[in-house]
Image (cartoon, rainbow, N blue to C red; front, side, top):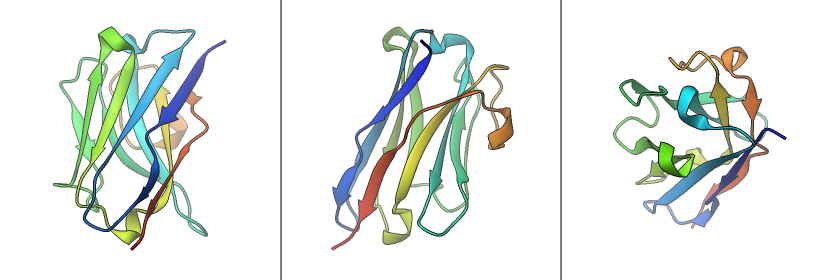
Length: 124
């Protein structure tokens, strides 16, 4: 069974950091671009960041540039999202997704496999 599992979410104070992980089971992530998306209460899901299969291409939403960093360890079949200087507006359920072309973008419809999400809450 092909599955993506996110972990690392939680409650953090403004200015704090979290590292999200996206692990794959049942398939290898090596040939997929991985995107991170998030959905805040009452809002549509939005793209946060992606990394291409060969790690040569990454991109970030304007709202997280300079604060979030995406990386991957193909040996561990895992992609990470390091989130620093978190703000209350970063509160959302964060999802990772796999895009089979390997190039990556922030278009939801291009992603084939999705995880169940992990909650990130930024609050004092």
